[in-house]
Figure 1 (tube, rainbow, N blue to C red):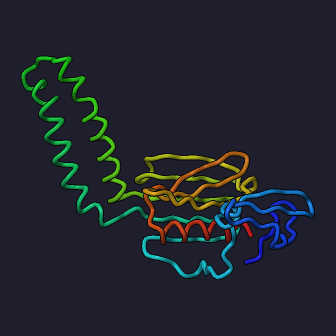
Figure 2 (figure 1 turned 180 degrees about the vertical axis):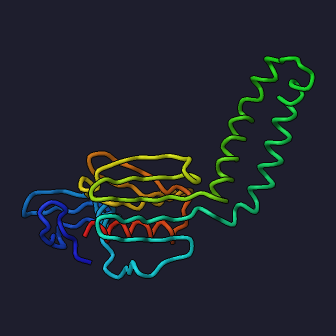
Figure 3 (figure 1 turned 90 degrees about the horizontal axis):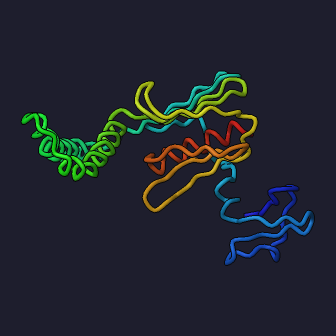
Length: 208
């Protein structure tokens, strides 16, 4: 693999590449940059945007295009009953009993806050695994990132012309995609490796 300077785009000589330290030095312009970041943002010349994957779609009409990936997952088979049991028993036992008796118990209510937060998180995660989606759409230079269900969810608007890099982040538990530019926009948590790869490379294709 040839290492190309991120600043001047010249090929960096192999003796200026240090894999152990994750750095490369360009003796042409003096730039020092990270090898792992270079790999994460590299364009994949073998990627074919016409080959779709299950649960993903890409529509390109020139000045308007949109890539969308579904968050539907088999983990919903486990999440649905678990969430029903967790939320049902914990919340009905702590707060339901107070509603039925008509008496407010401050101690029990405070004790139930972690269960309430956990239930909200589980319900959101379950709904995303059933109906959720991540999408990026661009019309001319006006971009939109969305994660959610239907029209309800998390939105970020941005200028596509200002995006300089598309990065795939592979954490221990979750993957994500980051658009780097005037500001960083990170999204796509919970997508599979295949979905993350597909969406990131569609975005890189549109930056070519």
